[in-house]
Image (cartoon, rainbow, N blue to C red):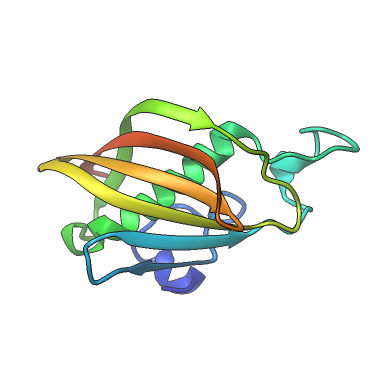
Length: 139
């Protein structure tokens, strides 16, 4: 899915749409990518002269990529919302120019609740990981 296709399943729009492309893999996992340009709003003050993508933004990127796994379960009028973030760890800095890869797998499903594990990497180095929970609710 490209950005326009992602907008059919995600409620996010610029500047909060934080994926460039995403795919559902044959094994039931999802993979997404984002190229950090350097002019993003969240880098303007984090930190001047030494920009680093904030951890909370990395968590949002992981959440958005997880929603690709819900594409077939979502319809008009539904909304994926966070219900929890657990075991999140940050192991490396993400900077302008980095191409982020996000891999997500489902751990549990009890509709409308879903639990997933996501890992965010740059050049094969894990920068963030964690378990995310979601509910698909009526908008």
